[in-house]
Length: 255
Image (cartoon, rainbow, N blue to C red; front, side, top):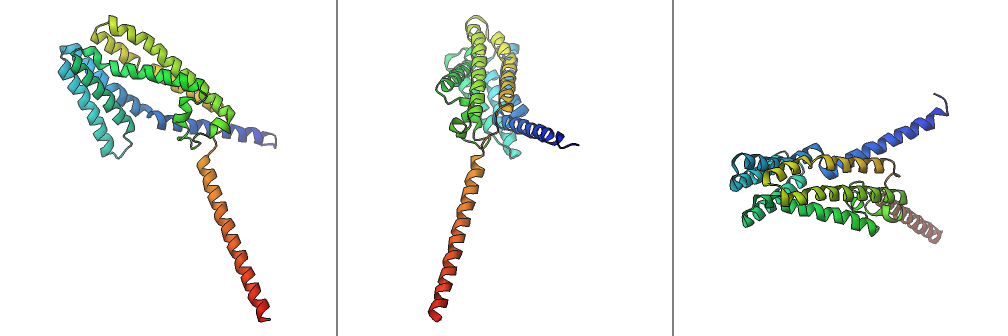
């Protein structure tokens, strides 16, 4: 290998490391494959049972039961439960709403409203200069909000990703809300299940593309630790100097 090859290979290694870190952060933030499964299974069970027997109560109980089971499995494995718990709350709201109205389609309405609200949040926060995806991923990358003022290239990438999330979720809502009025419960449920994963994967992939090309995150935690260590060393040095001066003073007095 020549001296000219080494910088190129180092740059490629750094780029690969950045992509690996980005992939790991996205998996942590959005739950990975298991998180997607936990998101889909309750709704899939609900629409399957309702398609077979048209019984709202049994469909709702089954969906809520499997959501709770997923949380129990997470707890038994001592794994993070935030994604499973979010699934339980989403299913519980849907069950309560459907039971109150007696309309099985209302099982899906809270989730649809949440998706619409989330799409609006992505767009509004981006227009305000604080893209939501940056607020979500900043702590995961250990950069917190440093990207807002200290890393403009990264802020731009977060803005692009937030626009992607907002527009993709709005497109999903544009399909689902008309179906809420026109389609029956089974049709709406199966289409909603079909649209659960592909838009999510598209948004995550675009986020990865934008962030993989962005500048590396600023690790503010490492900076704080370095500052604390430097402060300790400074105090230790001052203490040593004070001790040396005191010793020198005693020697002068003795002389």
